[in-house]
Image (cartoon, rainbow, N blue to C red; front, top):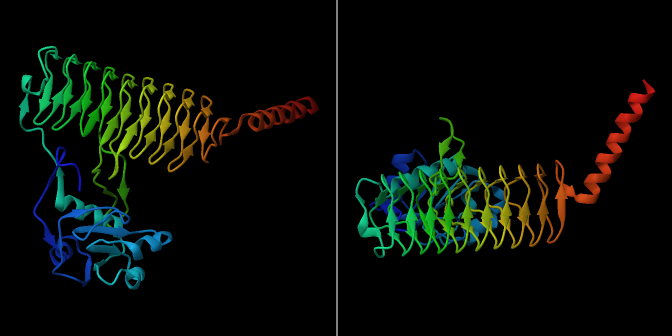
Length: 334
């Protein structure tokens, strides 16, 4: 179930009602009541889930979901005890179901001093704080920043001006510099016959103690699980961290680094400027990614990779030297 501090759960619906409102074909279980959505692996009896990739068929057969949304060719693989909706666009249908059952808590009521733990909290002019938010002792919130409903900020933090923070739990001694965006919806779109459908992002951002987030950097909330930034990690200006990423402790991310969704980064990893990381990869503990590298494969612990596509440093340098010699030789030949 999405965190109730950040998301309202609306009235449950029967599978028959979901069928009528999304256009998916009801195969069985129309009376089953659905109250939430979840991924295949974690869905419970009141949750709707979906299968869009047949490579995950083993998860479908094992799911405990009350309703599964599947492609017509996968109907027979659905668990016997689950209600079934059939559609040629399962993920888009699941996204529509998500929107029928959950919505973000709106910022239509605000508080100010009530959110502060004590009188040492400083709210500069123009700060907006949503209902249910809490701000720890010694923390300063910069001018014109917005702290969304339910957000929890620890002690001795420094939030710069024009920052927006939503759907987030933030530890102690965290620094967030001007213009940063924490907790915006991750980029997720499902194809459909009517064009791409936004997939609701129902997760959170967890920022642990001692983290620094540079100016105008963005950390997206998870699609369903959380985006996590580990203790004492230092993030430069203009860095992008996408939904569901888990960044370890003591990381260093230089400016213009971009990390795609669902990347797992170990402790003590360093990223040079403009490093780009493909989605669903693992960067091992102590690895180093050179500036401008484009990582398209898992990086083992302790290795240094560079180039595009990125490779172990020595291999990348050998290839660069060889290419330069080839080009130089052709020039002389002319």
